[in-house]
Length: 430
Image (cartoon, rainbow, N blue to C red; front, side, top):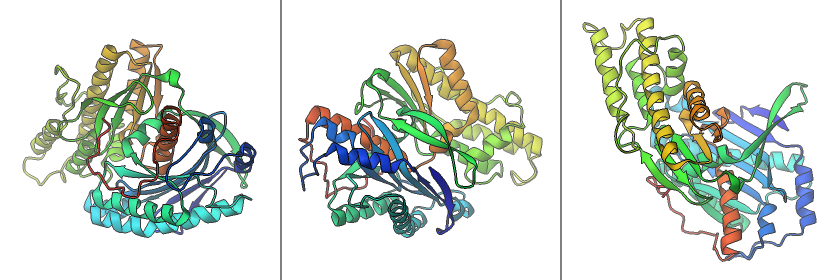
C-alpha cells in the first residue's frame, strides 16, 4: 500500500492505495459474478462477497471519497481513501459556514474523482470505473447544502456509469468503521518507511447485540443493535452535542477551532479537580444527555476569573488549563457513566465508541477501563483515531455491511437504484 499526500487540492488530501488490489480483482474475475440489472438486482449471497463500492461523504466540512473491495472470506481491501478538509476555510469563523462548505465540496468532488480515477488506472489492469459495482452516498444527518452537493454528484456519476446508487445514514458509518474487524499490518513504502495498513472484515454476527456510543459535533447518542440493520436509540442529547460543547467552551477560553483537540491539548496541562463543574443528568432516570448547562457553568467561571476584563483575554494559562481539564473530565464522566448504565441494563456483547469526539484520549482510556472493570467479557471496540473524523471509508463499510442483509433477507428483491435521493439533515437511525 502506498500512502501519499497530495497538495493538488486547496486542502490536505490523503490517498491510500492497496497494492494487493490486483489479487482482489483477479478473485473477482474468477468468481464469474453476474452484472447488476438496470433497475432491479437479482443476486445470490456470493454476489455480495465480491463487491467494489465507491462511497461519497459530504455531510459537513470534510469532502470524502473512498473505494473498497470485499472478497469471498469477508475480508475488505481499502483501495483508496481520500479526504479533503475545510478546517482552514472555516477557522476564521470559529465554526462551519454551510454555504462555504457547499462551495468547497462542489470544488473538491471532481478533483477527488479525478485523483481516484488516475490512481486506480495506474495500479490496476482492470477497467475503472466500469468495475465499480455500487455507489453509496451520505444522505443525512448533516448540513443540507453539504449533503446535496454529495448527492447530486453521486446521482450524476451513477447515471453516467449506469451503476446502482444507495443512500447511507452518516451515523451508521461511525458504527461500522469500529465494528469491522481490523488487522494492522506493516508494508514497506517506496521511501523505505514502515507505514500501517488497515484491513477490515465484514462484521461477524456473533458480536451482536452491540451498544454504540456515538459522540460528535452534531450528535451524542447511545444506540442499541440486535443485528446488522437494526438500530434503536436508547439515549441522546436534549440540547448541545458533546462535540458542540467542546467547541463552545474552546471559544470561551479563547482557543482555536476546532475546539475538541484544542481543549484536550490544554487539559493535559491542567488540574481536572480544581473546578467543581456539574455533571448534567448524571443521576436522571433515563439515558439522555445535556451539555448546555455545563457550558454555561464554564461561562460563569470565566466571568468570575476575569471580572474587570473582557473575557477570556486576561485568563492566565493555568486558569485556562484547569478549566479545560475540569470541563473535559465532566464530559467524560457523564458519557462513561451513562454508557455503563445502559450496558448494565442491556448487557451487550460488544460496546462501540465512534464519532469525532471518540478521538479524545481521556474518553477512550476511561471508557475502556470502565468496560474492563464492570464487564471483562464485553468486547470494547474504539474507532481508529484517524477514522473518527468524517470520511467516506466508513460510508463504504456501512454500505457493504447492509448489503449483506439485503442479499440474505431480501434475496435481490430490493431496488437499490434510487433516482430520487434527497438530503435529510435530521435523519435518525431508528
